[in-house]
Length: 264
Image (tube, one colour):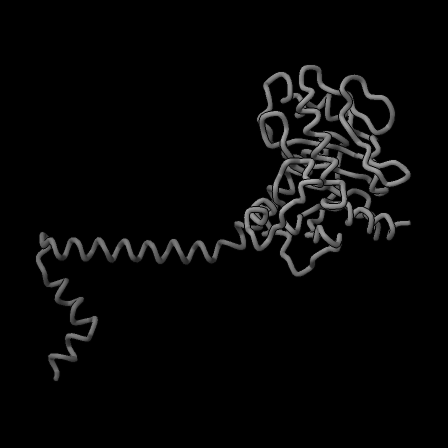
């Protein structure tokens, strides 16, 4: 009985291991496994403990990137607050963590996304997340600036950027792209500051509420148009279609309608 109990005691086996000669293959393998196991436990523990700090750093980097993109077009921007919105209702979702929410990841999850009806899929996305993370700047209790993530198909790539609207929710403050793969020197010019500046103070909808904002085929005419880029007509169409979708009823339309009513 005593021998059986000894065999169940970890200290017994540890002593037997230490008693083996240093050149023993069994001892070498056992020590290597113990070191590897200890390292794995330490790494896992550190990962769990550091996760909140890592998420905070990622959020700070996202905030800095968005602020830089918008500031490049309209000048200094104050602190931006992240919010998650239900795209179908236009209401904010306080129960979803705006820091960790990833809209692109949600769009790939069948349970957290919806198919875009063909008649509404101007941006060529196929599916979109049920929720989106936006950014707002408030002055007092009023929203002074709202920054919306937008993406859609261009001529030969997915265009990804941010559209900033002023507090009337109908005037463009800025449009900035952070990712695209259009033709260098042609469609890729959508990232140039000179072209992006053209979006400032453009109107997105007319008095009837119809989305009118578009990239012209040549020179812009009127408050709803932006100059087209020579040799990049299809990229311009992609930008127009992207905005038509995200500003419409299947995109941020319900949110913008609600905010306009609340501010009137």
